[in-house]
Amino acid sequence: MRNAGRRELKKNRHSLSFVMLVYNGLSSKREDMKQLILMILGLMSFLPCMAEEVHPKGLESYVGKDLRKLDDDGSRRVLEKQIEIVTGEKRDEKNWHLCEPWWVKPFARGDGAWMLLEAHPGYDVPDLSAVQVHLFDKSWKRVAKDSFPTGYRMLLKEVSISNENPLKEGLLVAEVTSTGPFIVRGNEKHPAFEQGDSQFEYYALLSDHFVLVRLEDNNRTLVQNAFSWEAPVKGPKVPKRTPDEWIGSLNSKDPVEQLTTLVWLSGRHLTSTEARHENENQESVEDSKLFEAVRDATETKRSLQKLANSQNAWVQEYAKFTLQINGQ
Image 1: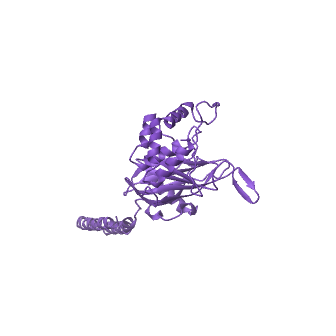
Image 2 (image 1 turned 90 degrees about the vertical axis):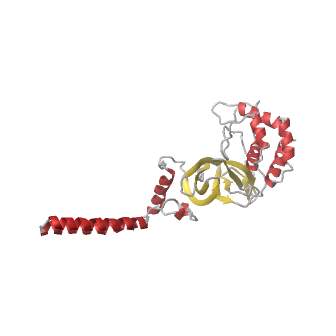
Image 3 (image 1 turned 120 degrees about the vertical axis):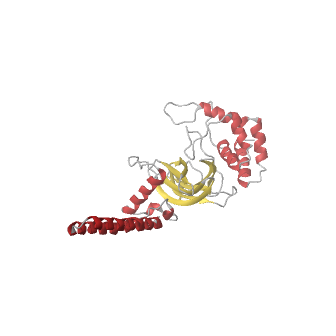
């Protein structure tokens, strides 16, 4: 851009010299000539500034920085403006649940090259923590956008990218801790309704959206995700599938497909016979029946037994966990 500006400046200087020669041949009025020269000099002094002005194309300058620590003066406003440019979206300041920028990192997966992560930690009690992910290609064209909760009454402490895992691909990892209530025994305090003192949620990119492929506590023990709500409060919404499609995903050659299905199959669900209450956030009877049909299918049991011997450590662990949960 800078070289282009200089070429433009050189071109303009030649054009201005030509204008002066023509004007000099046509006008003999010294005062008019003086005014023209002053105008030309003023224009020439402005052109170098235009040539030097360079706007960043993407968000590379923010890589490696904790965007939560940006000052509230001009630097934060500059960042917000640049995010508006690359996403093409205006910031909704009236949204009290607005996700704030946390970081920009390389993320080479699919068409992606860069990731911008925004998050809402869930400071209030009760509150729902959440993340919003923007994925860009090498030229900073957005190729995917996704947002999902990371927990009810769960404080979002950190979000990172893990490249060292059995899936051998970049995973988004959210660390959350309970905001209560707690059980106190002596000097120890532990969450009353959550497993472990903290939990880790692993998300993989599947096509153009993220899916939950693993949920574990601080002891690296698998945790059942809760699907007894209308929509889960940890992770994206459950996709609409038929029983055959759910079973088919267990038999997929893609371990990401297998794991996100195992997370759902090993989760906590309401039974189809449990009473539902009006205006209460509960899993629908239809969704409970769907889960029960998939869980009880002979093909599901056969697939789980096969996956319990998978070469992928996470798939094997989750298949055994699911068999244990469902008493098979």
